[in-house]
Image (cartoon, rainbow, N blue to C red; front, side):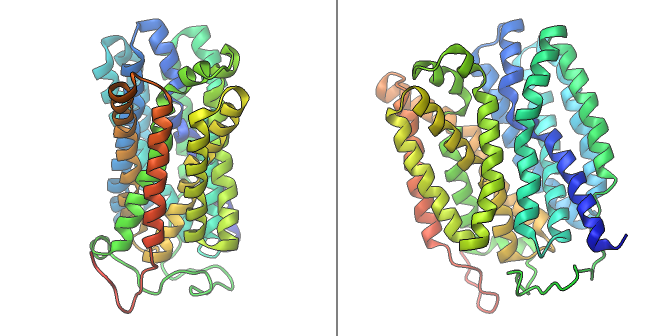
Length: 405
């Protein structure tokens, strides 16, 4: 099989890996059982997810830099084993209290997921320079589908054997699937290109930026801040979605499955927005995305019942979409050669957003309005306005006359 056809097997392998490591967005499923079986507070449980996403972003940067030097396969294999260790050890840590679980599931698990995610993404972009939007849309859609696929599985297993054994079973399943997927994770030969590929027609720059060169550009900092602010809108209220759903008039059954529903929304956002990119370009798509976030956040201030649920699904879709838009937007400006490290830096914006957004919003809500839930959505709207301003300031990198910060 020639390399151009073989790349679709690599895309399938990457998708298999992504659906496993998408566990990063389904902590609330695990957390519900942790709260029930060990009496954790909601705040202690929610912090696990924030730590995992923050460490995921750090792993994306460090893992990306390493894979730029030695290739993605060894990084994915080592990180898959480490990922297994973090989830498996969580089965022993959960009874010891929050700090132990933060280290295992949050730090070790999250960092490993970041290494796998960014290395896999960088590899697939190099195999699909001619179809970069579609290929990124596919693998990040699978990343988002993890919540939809594994939430009911985890729920059934945990109800049957308890959360401690569930961690062990899920860890073993993920290890096997990730190692199988890693077989096909390998960069193409250095001078390889798909049949009929032309770099300029694909929208890729001639200059391949190093990480240090990219850091000196205002464009990279705008991408970093914009993805931070646009995802902050969702992370602001994501840890308390179930409580918000109940407060806005949804019954217990709907509020319980809201995690699965938001996972489906995120997957749809990652799948559909790349199609918009093909028609109007990345910057315009990002602007549309930010405007939708603003409109959705404003609607959520007042929405009740089923309208609240619909808007939450839309909010989840817009929170998932940056995962499909920003990687290719970064590549479009800085090239493929060092995309692991460069996009890894952009990922830090998502990590910071996850780590501090809810804490800051929760503090403001309690101080300013006695914990009133509309405050979370006002803050989300403000972050969307900041994102719109940043995107409006963005101009593509000029390879001939580079502007530095």
